[in-house]
Length: 613
Image (tube, rainbow, N blue to C red; front, side, top):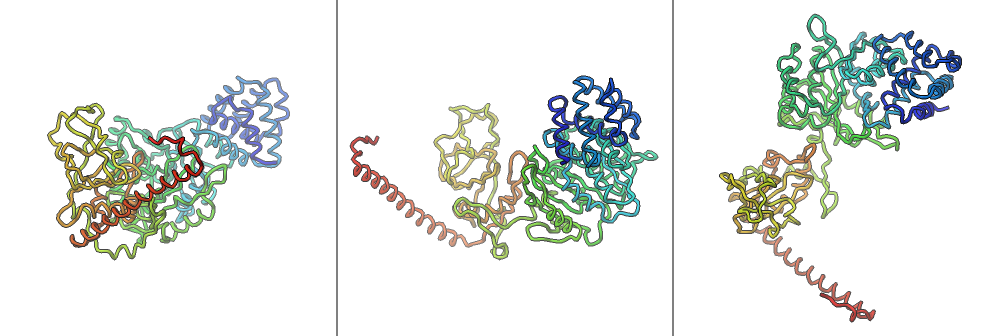
């Protein structure tokens, strides 16, 4: 007998009747009743009112009253509206399977099996819980307090309680259905905990003497993509518990709200872990300021970039932020970056982190081990613009180039090359933010778009024209002959040299324009920007959630080889002379290839039937 079969068979009985979360709750309710009354099930199924018998037993369970009330309401609403035979099947199936399995084992399988079929049910994957708990359990005392303000179904909290000795769980969850399922899990696993139902942002429940209760360990895996209201932001500015000392998140990206709530509930010598979308590590605006303040307070001990798709139905990249308010002396002033994005396997049913990789990650975090292409310490002063993405500091020294395939970069050799920052060699200008409402085929200006550049050449014949009324600063966007153009938005970096003498062409906002100074030849710069070295640099400095972007700061910092101008000219002249020769030879070969095919057609006797236009 397989416990997966129980989850499948029981789920099939309710398939198409209720939503997944309600079905999980109702099956959990049956299992809770069965924990102490399974011997009564054969008698119950033969009674005149099966639903009423089960409802009576629900009231006798040692579960908090508000949760029993919600269980009873949901149970009666479902099973009073469908044939009694459905409930009978579930009861008898449960009675059979409990001869071989524990109630807690069956419920865990139900959550796993039914949850995989729901796009709305996002539980914390076990692999992430294991990594977070390994970090949190280290250094715990004989008696430990644990808090999760967005507990959901409580996977991480329950795992923590199993591994830590003498722990008190203080959990909060705003959704009554999720909180009730959590209470059922705790009950079935015989784990004691306080479970409050409320919004952690609006009303943190664990307050003592008008102050937030402080916990040894805190974990939160909040729902992603929180959007704040103007009222919520105003409340944060006047928060009675001063939870938002790191800053107020933007209205459209409120994920760091939960980090502030969690850290404010962490003891001065406590640790906390947060599962968040990767965007919190690199987005600008208020989030950048919050990250910088976290760095200044030196509370981030490690950032772990996780593989994609660990949670079904979402391709969003996620990270673990591991925080310590009392970092050991050998870790102060630095952050351990861990890039575990490639540490996943696909076992057909789901994508997971294999056990050996979890062990490796835990070992790296515990021992502070630096592993090539996986982990390294980054000193706080090394971090610019609050950028905390591990891949910015840890990466494979290789890049993909269409002409050559995969190219490995010898970083030691590269570092020996004398260079200057691009900002010392060129003047930069930005593109014009063109609007479709200004398009006019008789307009005064033409705007160059990314699609107008092909194979390093600017195609001027099909440029979109615009009428621009407010053109006071239009000269700032006007392209001049000899300018080098680089696309900075999108996945690929396109490079082109503007050779035309036209004065009516502007650059779109998707480009950065570069006007070379006296010490840099524009064609030399174009060749360098097209090189695998520059492309490797661009790959490692491009970031974004919806649109990948190379920042102007990173572009200005690009190292460019320092050569005398006369040497640059020699390189360019030699390249272009050889390039012209190759082009001519290719044209001759192409012509000969056509002639050869015509000879073949003649030999076949079909040439006279062909009329080549």
